[in-house]
Image 1 (cartoon, rainbow, N blue to C red):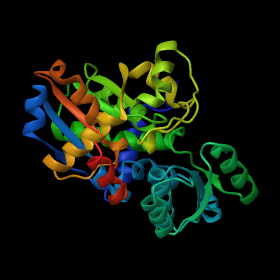
Image 2: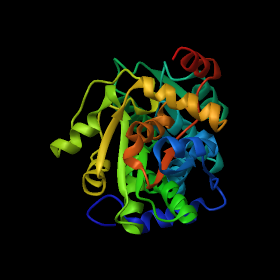
Image 3: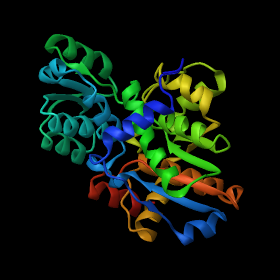
Image 4: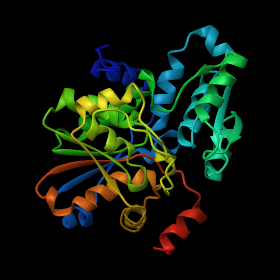
Length: 322
């Protein structure tokens, strides 16, 4: 460990733990996307990861590092859906009880999947209740290990393995776009990039309505906002964590935002051109790359597709209504 929560060795160790457990997801290409930007785009398909999102990487890494006594007692997490499924499946693979605190307006596909992996789901109102306080109270009352969705070193290190795989597969990149909510994926990816290719420009992407991280990076301190209203439900976080922010401040070059309308356009493009169903949060990097357009000309650009968990009627309604 360095003075920051994680370093490259932590990610490499997580990658070894995940070998043979997590999917080594493919890298996708689109000649149409390349032509529109003048760049060579490499889409890291984490929507094809187990549970349909990169979150499985960090969830499994964190659960695997618990002591045997704690595994017998169980784990608890709070999540809008993808981390919920990750912890639920990771707990099942370790024979461990899982309790998941989820917003009552989370996509039904995510709630159903979490229960399907064997977890006990506790619903809450994301606009009036504090999920962290609820999760900590349940953890204390029932002796459960709390594994938060991003502000945890083992989660952060696990998420970084997605970038390690991407660099292993395609080599050096000029720019890497990474979806951003609480900063677990971004901090992990930035840690890998800085160690492997220091010249790679790391760009976090969050929804316009929830630009707390962008404000935080520019002010040099964590900025909290009200829970944002955006279709990117996986990025409806009010603030970065006290572990993720220092990593982002030191290792990330910039944070940009995209509108919900651009997210829908990106979803439609990925479905029509690459035949991939990507959830709104998962398209943050895609939308940002298209928004940058010709500024990327001549560059090798990585784009994290962070998840694909969206109800098909919801997907169709969003794309049809654009």
